[in-house]
Length: 73
Image 1 (cartoon, rainbow, N blue to C red):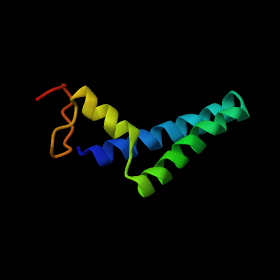
Image 2 (cartoon, rainbow, N blue to C red):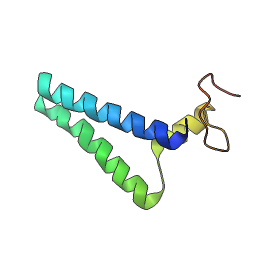
Image 3 (cartoon, rainbow, N blue to C red):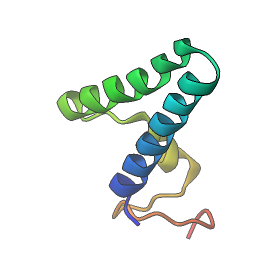
Image 4 (cartoon, rainbow, N blue to C red):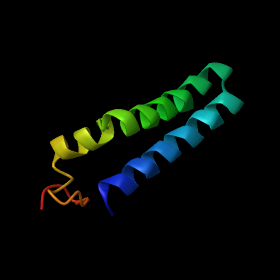
């Protein structure tokens, strides 16, 4: 799996989780999927993606942007 696919999976999961929390807990939770959407939009224009940066710092991504689930390869 590539970093790009993992970030899209993470964004979709957090969005669905935020919508579920909005439905079952409180409407304020709608800010969570809004935040995810805004971060996706800004990453298109700036090229900066915080989840990718975190994955690289953790050593889960190599130079080819391939995920290593067990940590460092």
